[in-house]
Image (cartoon, rainbow, N blue to C red; front, side):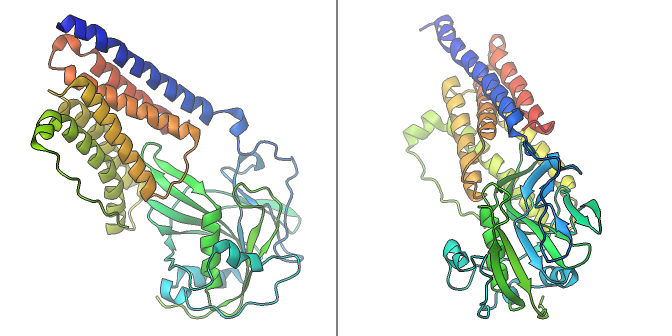
Length: 413
């Protein structure tokens, strides 16, 4: 087959990939900005408030991105009844082992609660897993309260997490009652998304159970029950965990294992060595970015996360297209495209498993598809770039890579 005949066969393939890239990215943006997806859709002008304690401050059982009810995000899913300062001291100045002592018997749940279901729902009858809370950083979210005839917005009194900022964590925002009688919390699971440069929430029910179990094992808690607040919280089953504090007991102060891949036979390695090297490099770089961010966070826990994210993000943005273009040289164009897409896609899957992500919204799936197609086109073009007359696929791939980075950076995903 002559070069001209080969060109005629491969040209439609990379053009189709470029078209699919644009379609996937356009779909991701459309889904991400779909009007029906607005978090505050249908919220009444006068929001329904709840009363955590009798004759106390009223609470709107949601958090919001800004100081308006239409910007609501996640529902409040825990309320701790007790002196706010005592609660804060117990949470922030304790260690895992003292927090997870065997709990005393907890009896006397009110009729309208269903405390008995907690153990069944959690599936645990014994000691819960150790949870080590530490102070956390995160975007500001507001809570609305009505106190002494006046409504006002509160920012977080403090934030805690179990896990890592640049990995996966259970994240809790706490809001203290202006009268000091309760602390409202919003707990959720999330992971850091290096393409979106922000955290993606994966669920609230599991995080709620984690905090719930933690309080059930605390020696200074009288009772852990559930109240059906009926606020329609997604994933929260419309109930809020209510913790009743007693006397404060003085508190004391994942790594992934990768199996070595089997070496292929000499003949197969000689034939597909470049494609394999390209794929492994992309696989290692993407996962390396994840664990590099976590490692820096562990070494310098007081560093501003934004100062850590910036250089690591540049490594991702510049490293992936560079590896795809350079390591694909001399490889089979189709094999380079397939290897880049398959191995980088595999890295996405491994990362999702490590971050315990069980499901992704459609807009994220479409965006990652566009990312893979862009990298595949770069690899395809890199394999052809030895011929100066065949650099168009590489240019299209590089432009596509730049395009897929813009929407998440601007907050459209």
